[in-house]
Length: 150
Image 1 (cartoon, rainbow, N blue to C red):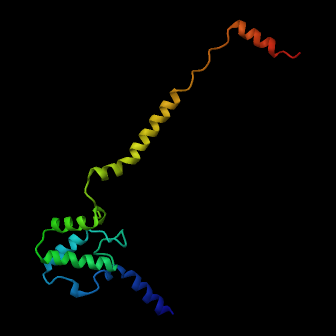
Image 2 (cartoon, one colour; image 1 turned 90 degrees about the horizontal axis):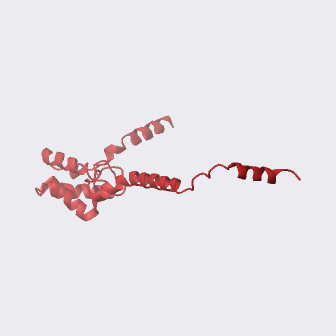
Image 3 (cartoon, one colour; image 1 turned 120 degrees about the vertical axis):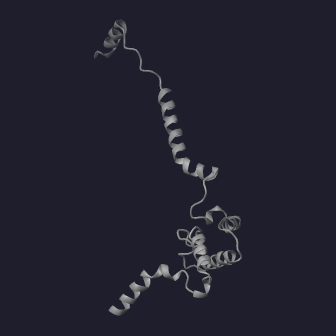
C-alpha cells in the first residue's frame, strides 16, 4: 500500500512531463524544436484553458503541437503561425492576447462602471430638496399652541 501511494504521488508530480509523450513528436532539428516550443508556449490549450499547448496533455493540445511543428518545419515565421492559429481559433487561443480596442474595453469596464456609479450617486444626492428653513416666531407659537394637551 505504501509503495502504491509513493508511485501515485510520483505520477501526479510528473504530470507536466506528460505533455510531449512521444519523442517522435519532436522535430529532429534542435533549433526548430526550440522555436516550436516557444510558439507553443504562447498558445492556450482550448480544453484546459489555463495551460499552454506545450504543458497540456489533452488530445487537442497534442494535435495543435503537431500543427505548430509542421508549420515550423515548413519554414513559416512565428508570427505567421500565430496568425494562422488566431484566424482558426480566435484571439482566445493566445495566452497573452494583443492589446486591442476589445481587450482594452474588457479591462476598462470595471473602472467605467465605478465612475458611472459614482456619478449617479453624486447626481442623486444633489437632487434631494434642501432642508426647510427654520420656523419664524409666529409659526413656532402656532406649533406650540397646537402641540399643547387639551
